[in-house]
Each structure stands twice: as C-alpha cells, then as structure tokens.
Image (cartoon, rainbow, N blue to C red; front, side, top):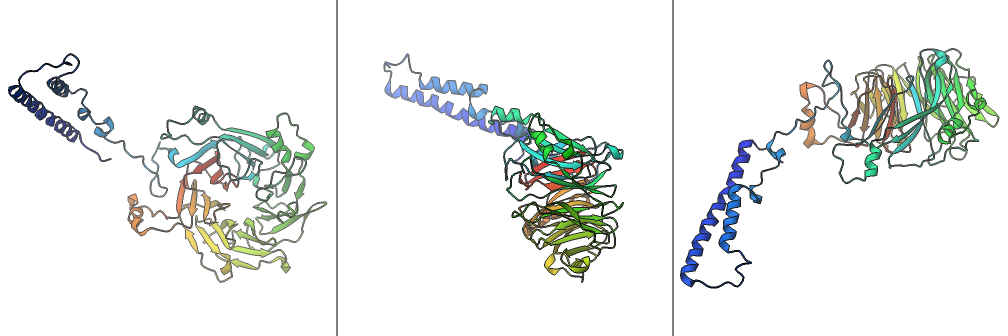
Length: 512
C-alpha cells in the first residue's frame, strides 16, 4: 500500500462529496415536469411508501451531514499516518553496538527460541536420543542432553543429564486471532529445565554420547547408555547415564548410585595431558554394542578404546602423525576403520586404524592459516568434510582430492571474525551446516544457494561500506556470550542447541 500525505487524503474526500449535488437538483426538476404533464393522482400506498423526493432529499441531507454515506467514510487511520520505522537489522562486521545499546531478537524469524540458564557454564554437551519419535514437528517439544560443567573448583564439577520440556512455539505479533484458546494458553507457559547429576572431578573439556542407530529406541533401563567425558585432569571417563534419564521420566525412580556415580571405565592412556578431541563410532545396527572411542590430547597423540564382551579395552599404541595439539576427531560415516583429525599444526589428517605404524594415510597440510579447531564429516555426501580455523575461516573439502599437495577447498567463507568453536553438518540435509564462533555468532549455511544476478545489487548495497553477505549464509543467531558448541537435534528437524558462558539456547528458524 502506497503512502499518502494528509493533504492528499483531504482532497480525495472532498472529491467524493461533489457528485452528490448534481443528482439532487436533477431529481427536483424531473418532479415538476411530471406534475405539469400528468396532473395529480391518488396513491393507495401513500402512507406506506416514501416519494422519490423524500428519498432523494434524505440522501442529500445525510450526505451534507457526512453521515451514513459509504463514499464519505474517511480512510483508515493507518493510511493517513506515517508508517512506523522499520527495525534496524544488525549485521555483524557492518554495524557496531554503541554504549548502552542491546540486541533484541526478532521473533518473527524464529519458529522456536528459548534461553536456559544453568548453575555452571558448560564447554561441551551432546544430544541424547529419546523415545518420543523421529521427525517431530509438533509443539511443545522436549529434548534431552548431557553436559559437563566448568565449575569454580574441581570438586564442584558435574556430569548432568538435562530434560528440556514445554519448549513452546515462539509467539509472534502477527499470530492469527483465530487460534484455539488452549494454544494461546500454552504459548504463555515457560519452558522447564530439569536435571539429574553425578559428581565429576575436574572441569569437563568435552563430552560425547555413544551413537545409537537412527530410528532406534532408547535402550531399556537395564542396559547401559554410555557417555564419555574428557577431564582437565588428563583422564577420560565413561559413564552410564541411562538411570539418570529414567529418573527424569519416572516419578519416584531410585537411582542406583553404584551404577551411575562411578565411571564404568577410565582411560589413563594420556597420562596427565588433557585434551579436547573425542568421537564415538559404532559398528552399525548389526552390533550397536561394539563401540569404539577415539581421544586426542594436547601432546598430539590419539588413542583408540574399543569394547569387548568383557568390557572396555584401551589400546596402548597411539596414532602420531600430528605435531601439535589434536583439536577434533571424526569417524567416517561409511568406513568403519577410517577417521579424520585436525590439529593446531594447521593440518587435517585421514587415518585408517588398519594401517601399520599408526600413521595417517592422507592429509591436507596447511588446511588453514592457523590452528584447525573443528571438523565435521558429511553423513550423506560422505566425501565432503568441513573445517573451521582459529582465524575464523570455514572451508569445505572434497576428500576425493585429498593428498599432500595442499588441495584447494571447494568452498570457503570468512564471515566470522574470531575462531570457529564448533561446526556440524545438518543430519539429513547434505548441503546445510551450522557453525559457531568466538565472535558470539551462530550461523546457518546452505551450500546449495547460488547468487542471483538480479539480486546482486541489493546484496552489494551494504551500509557503511561494510561487507558483502554471502548468499549461502541463511541465518545469524546472536545474543549469547562466548559460544562454545552447537548441535542439530537429530529427531526435531531444524532445531539447533548451543551452549555458551551464559547457558543454553534452543531455537528453530524459518530458514531451515
């Protein structure tokens, strides 16, 4: 709808009134002519019907008074007033917050958005499978995660299983008025955050849950559900958290502390060297209990721990091709003996556990200009690998070109202005991924999006000569401080959970 000034509105109203004067004069003239030619006659319905003159005079009088005439109705107020200014969209790297300015989220672009505070910050968390079904779209939603704390002193740390429930759909200003009252009441409910915890000596650098096959149910409470924690003490502990989940779901359930409060196994292979890199692998649906766990430390060593019918077995010989701290590890989604690693030595390495000498079989040296912090292996297009560097760059690698001649990435993005802290492919959409950075941004990307030449001009018109927005950048989520890790929820499509210094965010955008 186009805008109009007050002068234009008044002129239009007057124009509508003018045609009313002409019919009234013509009607009276026609009445006198009829009387002269035909004379008077008796009307049997005189008392019940109005004459033409009375009708016309009544309409004319109403028109002069400005009442009961549709054409005289003034335009709606919003047409005659100035439109409210559009909200300022904050673009990182282009705009800067002034003193006392804060960012306000636009809930119109979120399907769901919730903030949750915890007692102690968590550097790392992982999402636990549940029995609520896959591909869930209905609200309110429920999610289960496991997290490790960074408390003020070593003895105050914990491993906690959180149940996030009553995750309502975000209420927007333009929600339709015809929604059910029950739905409106539900939107006003606050989300619930419940937890069950076990003590953990030392801060938790990273925590990972054992993988469960897609569409498989949660193991019965009599069977273990393992998570592994990388402690700042240099030890890797393996815990059974299945009773903690049961205690959140079943009122009055009593936890067997002998099962949950003591690690099922502790890996001492790293000595006193702490680490951050860790990843589970399963041999698949045929034998999901045959687990393998990789752990990498700051002294460049990677160790493999496997499971046997009698328990866990930590192999003593490390993998040793890196020359600096191992920052992240990822098992291949299709090759059960192959995994990838990245390091502060600026390289990405590919390994096969069957290779002699525990050396990498391929690699990308100088994958980034600085430390390579995180990697993610695409589960659908299995030759694509993501990497995020300390310089803030994101790169996409085609492993079919992987060798030691420094191959060129198939895509690269330099949007973030601080180290990439986490990166992960979407679990089902092979072109979409999420990343987080120390610049307090969580970004969503789609490699399938290409620049439209007709829209190039609009993209170039960034204010203050700032920066071009890559067409593949779908969404920028902000508001958290010191974002450390992000994960897509595998059972709630499009939902992202992030952890930061000020707690957890759970959100789903209109973009994915």
